Length: 469
Ligand code: BGP
Image 1 (cartoon, helix red, strand yellow):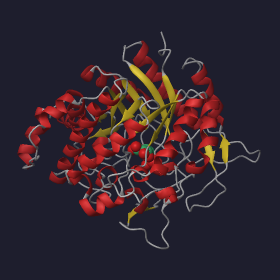
Image 2 (spheres, helix red, strand yellow):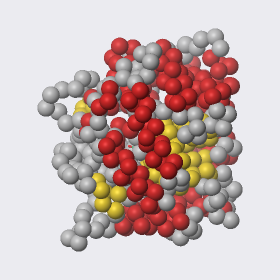
Image 3 (cartoon, helix red, strand yellow):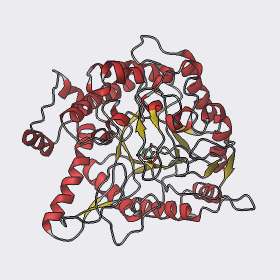
Image 4 (cartoon, helix red, strand yellow):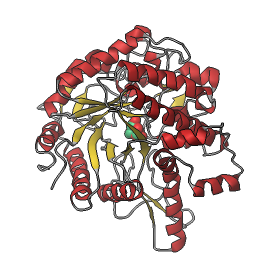
């Protein structure tokens, strides 16, 4: 009973949200470096170049680049078994299309991985997490261009060879399904928001092929490597038992399953091909692409889960502000976070089951957490019971999926284990961490790290392998 003995407990981050040092040691600009901060209700601005006088949160972030030793020591103190981080592509290939990598960038991640391994922390690496070298976006149109496959392969060849004996777990693209909603983040083209259409799906196809190719590449370099996909996945409920709404909800789930089908089963789903036909979308495939997709299926499914959504047929129904895969209406049975995300721990059990039923692959909850405002008490402590409650309830439901339903879950990494920059708003105020970072939305603060109440709580969760919640 309980979680497997080798369950990967830990925390998750992404390079552009923590590292800072955006031009240090030869790093090139990335697509994340030209997105200025917004705030709750105020959208972020994509400026395409760095503009004087604008505030770009990725430029300093929480300065993990210079403080990784201190931060990893804190993760070790919590007993982390793994640490999910991403590699900033523009540190390794500053423009993206060079033949040779930047040695200083490679050294930085050598140091980070060595620091993790020193404490027995397994690095779990996202190869592309919402950033692309800016040059690849401006000169090639990002993932709309098929040449991205070759640049990505070269980048991966460099990583797999260099970190052959340091990194076992990799994920090819963060939230691959987000490319159709936020193409700049996920694909280095277009704008911050978009409707799914021809351009987005063609870009997704290039990512599918790139991902499948590097799954095989990794196995050639080190057969022990485990390569996963990563998707933003959450349940969509019908507001009533009206079959029309139930069908709407099923179609919303199909929009997610399409990405999983390609990366886990190795082919395009029938429902998607029909949809493309109806919409006049044609995916340009080259000879051999279908075979590549079939031969490059992933070893595990990583996914992010924060909140569920509800669909309705009611016209003018009040919408909920949702999350990255947004939309939907208010769920009267759930409470929403300060940022309007409808918190739904049982939803986690539901999706663990639906994913496992459908693919029978090991599942990795690589993002889950509560973005909330924290305040420092007069005695210097941070009493984040709301965060403890959120994570506790989600772990409880994950435990049921393991114990009662027999779902194979390999790990859990809470999102933003240390406070970091929010993707959606660019804020620091939307905090997820067990560790507080002294920095505000305008970029002021000492960057000092402070353990929150949740720090000790999570430590005990890990020490008891999820028994003491
Ligand atoms: C996911 C991203 C993460 C992270 C998280 C929280 O979609 O993969 O990078 O940021 O969402 O979102 P936000 O930062 O908007 O609160």
